[in-house]
Length: 382
Image (tube, rainbow, N blue to C red; front, side, top):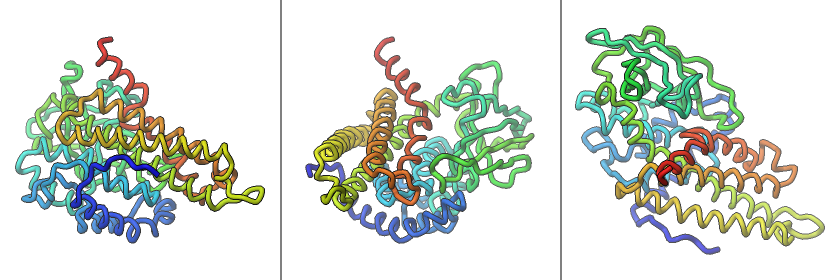
């Protein structure tokens, strides 16, 4: 089968071989237990840190590789998808959250948090979404009142990935209630701070092994030393970092598409009906032909996005294109995959069933499909 032109060099493929071995040995055998537990083990995070699978762009002085090359991030997502693992929150940690600290943190903050984030001793989360504010971040109500040497933080967040396990949480909050989007700041809340509570580990349709939590802040005293960047510029920082987050989601979606294609090809060759493999039926061959073509196109597109991200050329519009189109395609492909599997596709013991329920959130988190189209539409002059 034809393959898109690779964007990976030998050092990336060497890294992939190591990551693949790790996923097969340390992740795949434990997925069923983690789904029952609602979270992965902390031991996994420590092992991932030891293997150098976290936070590649963190400078060497803080324990990282010091390599700003998103292809390494993409490989981790691809290898997680290859074993059908949705529990380890490595991409959220490495691709989305830690870059805020790397780019905005003071020297003291970097020394305090980055080594643990690289080693897996510290797990991170970012608390944006609230019960009444999702894609519209300007609607955030969580407040932080300046009390001189600290802020007093009050509010609640929901749908927070890594929320149960997190030790370091970047909280999007309002430090000036009258300043619109210029009144939003980023505060880092740490495990153990008085008044910081975790609610239930949310019971989701999919991503069963990924801990997703409600968080509450009741008069939490957050030191001024935990302000990330400048007060009032949080919304700007979020907008600057969202393109990488959305391309990261696109990478995960394309990897999931390729995983589903592999599952379906294997099933179509093994499963027989009326005395022959179901892949021999023209309709099924056409379905698989469409999947293979779509996977090729999606891979070519996301590879281009990754290269543009590396070159600093991934603008918000491109990132929104990548996010909505790949995730909608993921939904289409996995739905066709379930249909191809017939009744077995509806059984949770089959990977295609888990791929189906895991995929549904991808069109929602990171900004819904509708929000992405709005961003693209505005860039067209409307």
